[in-house]
Image (cartoon, rainbow, N blue to C red):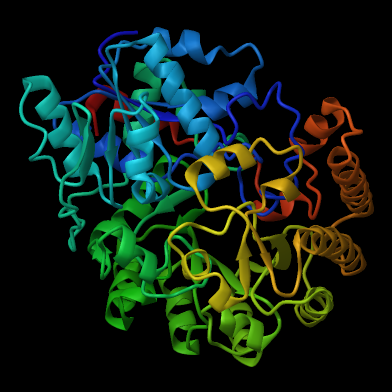
Length: 563
């Protein structure tokens, strides 16, 4: 395949997962991806759109998904068939440390003349190490907004011009490492567009639909996304995207905003293309009440009937919830209180009470919220095994208070803080201060940890209250307890509950056997990539429906008229 200026390549967490014996564990039970973490970052879409408007042909190849879909898919052969002078690989979260570097090496072997560019939060944090220790990496584009720097880098490479003028670029100048200033941190992001029409066009142009899909189950359980801004104003303890991390690592001291009208129109356009829920990434209130109110007004003005999923980073006032209901035909909510315990929650950087949480849940249900997902975590500062057990009991009380059926109403989830505490977060930079013990911190240590036989061995931390054994034990006990409560309250049927229970029990046994070196690889792999989940039924995450409903009339108009 020729005619590609930039290949955006998404790696699996561990490159050779189809052969490697790894007990992945419940690290992805509460996200759409499998444990291979095949969902590529939203930045792939914005980069492809921005560069496409400027005449560059950009192809996305979700190698992780293609490898999941078929054991016969050969990454090396696929890369050799793409004559792209530049290959961009995301290293956003550190869970891709092993897979990203392996794909970089294979890309270089397949096409030695290609330049390999890494980008993302983790690549930014470890940019010097990546260039110093890994010759397969030519460049690192730092920061959270690389559309413009990528355009300038492609121009410099095409013209043979100087690289020292490319903002945010880290590179090798002979044997010396160079890091251009991190100066492209735009406050206005209206030059960035999340246009799904680009994905449709490119998937057909390159005759590769699977390579452009965001995650394995997208066809059956699709969801679209909209992005109001980049950055964060909150200081969550273990998050690599928190306000402190954005400032110290990414050079962003405030939010980079997109106009409410642009975001609202993108929600309408995405829903017109694919009849699926649209997830509004981030809580719009982070940009202030005026921004959030303007966004809701613009959403209503579009006249879209899109089902919009809102994040609450903290319990909103009742008036905001009522405004959401007025602005949308249908809305859903996700909130992550982390713990039922106010003190534990406060230690994570979420200083609101359980009483405030319940008030906003009641207000959301009363306003007509369709799907209401509440997420809790294990491995938190100040959290004991008894506290985890208390969270499970609290989930039962929530289910009793807010009745619902299978796939509807309130759903509660619990998962471990795994596999890593994010580099750059407060817990990573000052672990003792926050009650954590880091077990490894370098890039190479994390890369090797991903090859551990079990997810316990990949955890890069313990706490003063639970060691790794305690975190693993508490996780499986919590999953089993919550599964029983969901059956009792009609959130799952008996067949599903039994399947989750079986997976939970087998997973516990496999962790113990693999740690002792006694389990075979096939049992671990078969369980870890199955759909059942070890803590919950994956179907609870999805919205009721019968798969992707494509607007074929709209797609044909797009292909014939380009709009």
